[in-house]
Length: 195
Image (cartoon, rainbow, N blue to C red):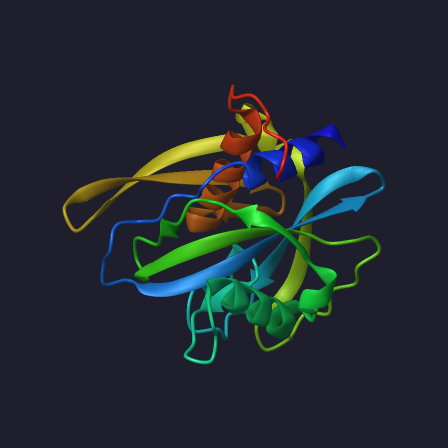
């Protein structure tokens, strides 16, 4: 579990970067980490075709900030409970990753990393979530599993990241959040003990 101790320490020792002020809608996601059979895993969701944004895509639980949310962490916790029925009291929040933006749907997304104790049993909301996808963290840490493509939007070329995790393709902002997590874990910086 050295990788989890390193991740927790590095999240506690850094300040996440925010995007410059922009007209994007604010949103937040939880990056849930849990241990299955001694292996650290990420918990992702496969969205239904009925949701408003990102239909059928693999994503982290989360959504748009709403007026009743006191902050973006509250948004991530509320959405996690609504989408996969994991209450905030079961989530140990370790910190946050750098804010990312969606190119097409116009969101600025704040990702929070949270550890889920074992055993944890998500219950997907069938109106929003088709399935839970559990993927070993080590899969994403293998650079041979990352594909990079390019797309033109509004006259600008954008880099697109893809992870092929059969039968799923994890791409777009979810892949960028995962890559941010991997970069934090693999950076050549000394670990700093949490305060």
